[in-house]
Image (cartoon, rainbow, N blue to C red):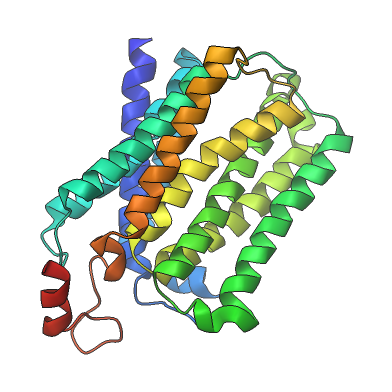
Length: 311
């Protein structure tokens, strides 16, 4: 159990590092439209590649943690990623504004809320693989959410979602849901690992994982390029485990605690998440870009703007 806790903490730190590095690498690419070449440009930036390597390392530590401990223990600890991101922002020294106590309180509330919800619900049991009849609607619903996010941010209504906090938040939420779907595909693939390499390479989960993983990476890159990390990161951290847990219930017939007290505590945990997110949405961290572009580029805060934010 101690190994699972330690590995989960390291995994959470790695994924937080990945978000910070990839945001710094992508901050100059605030495209007006969806850009499939974005990954090609980012792949030539060392800081973004460092973030990608950290993401892969975090995934490896998470898988190792799940080997030593249950999902109900590992996933709540992984929610600490949001706090590690805020710690990076506070210690950077390059941000035009500081992380205030209210921001810390919001981040703690959101991390504690998702951690408590997963811990109280404790998804368990179920089957190793899901029937195809359930995979189709789950896939289409996830795809519809992503398409809706892209339409809202890059389609005709984009005048209301220019590069900035709103676009980053919407794309961050869609990315979190996409990562949750990827987690469900990984679970499906893991059920075939004991059958040999031939069973893995001839089954659909491997190829869906490759396509969905690559598409989600592109989506995450657009979210990180769109605006402040404080806007996109909550979607990454909160909706990923929530959507993965919901898919676990629907696809793999997992069970959660549904006693009267459990349901009350789960509702309170979700309420804490909502309050934390609402408070963070009005934070000064959303008003300006974290780690801003160089002077003279679009998006760099002026001296007057920085003074207004500090007031």
